[in-house]
Image (tube, rainbow, N blue to C red; front, side):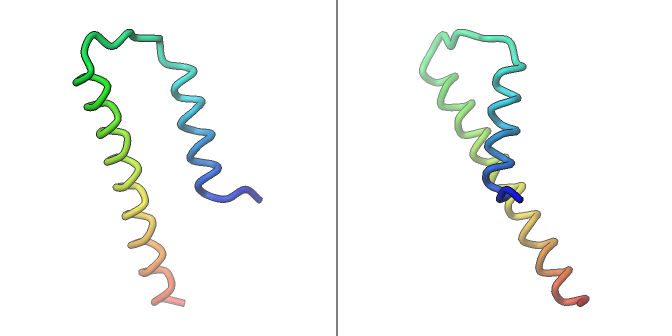
Length: 59
């Protein structure tokens, strides 16, 4: 079974391939997009950690 990080990477790449290609006009747009992606991934990881901690306490 593949790791979670490999699965997230596959999902991220597939989403990039499905989205229409948009040419960034300024560097600020690219930085904002990168920060948004990083914050989303960090949020998902934080939710997974909280879920895992709650699940381990119940078992």
